[in-house]
Amino acid sequence: MPLNLCGCISYLRRRPNPKGSGYRNKARLRGLNYKTEMLPPMPATFEVLQRNVQRLNLEKIKLFTCGLSQHSQTMTFAYYPNSTGWSTIYPDDSKEQRDLIKKVALNNLNEAPRSIRRLRWLPPFLRSLIIENKLEKAFQMEQVTCQLRTLSEIISEQNIRQIDLLKVDVERSELDVLLGIEDRDWQKIKQIVMEVQDLDRRVEKITALLKEQGFSKITVEQEPFLNGYENFNLYALR
Image (tube, rainbow, N blue to C red; front, side, top):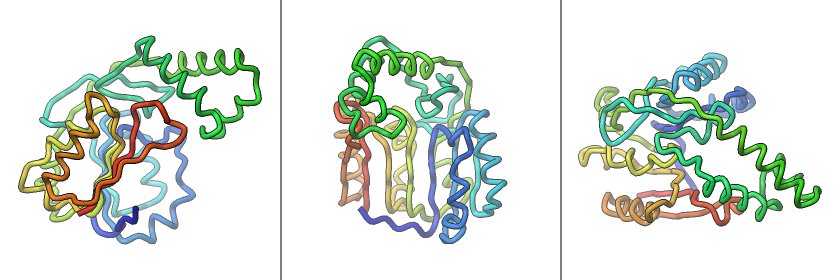
């Protein structure tokens, strides 16, 4: 789906890449005419993102040390240092969840990222053992207290008149973020890209909400290597 990448982009993400990758995109980022607001809630990942931005010297990127939710509040996050992308206020480290992730990984090896795809050359018992060890490490968790605000508060505070692209990747909190947008601000948002965890028919609920707010072109897709899992990508345009 084609997206307009000019104007103001709000990028709501639980984490940056802890290894600081992405510097090679410096020229590409500088060539785009947009202002970007980034809101990583956890101090450790905020510091990494801040260093990345300072090295790129991108004046149009603004960072906030908070996350977004339906209300302004302080919440305790499950922070996974070895798998920062899973950090969330709605953790699920149950045996059922781990078994599901393992099953999805094994069933979709041919479509998986290279680091996982290479396991297909190993005997099945060894594949299973390696994935179990990776999951054990990934689910090592720390509790971190973070401040959350609403998107409408940020819009008002920063006097944002238009958001050309709202990017949301918030690990099971996507509906909370959208419910924190007041009616007066919805028309300021022209495009949305978000990851949605389809729990309790969340894809259906979010699609209905976006249609109510005037988004007429909504596409839901799933990466092939996530077939059988809860993660979907949703794209919405007016």
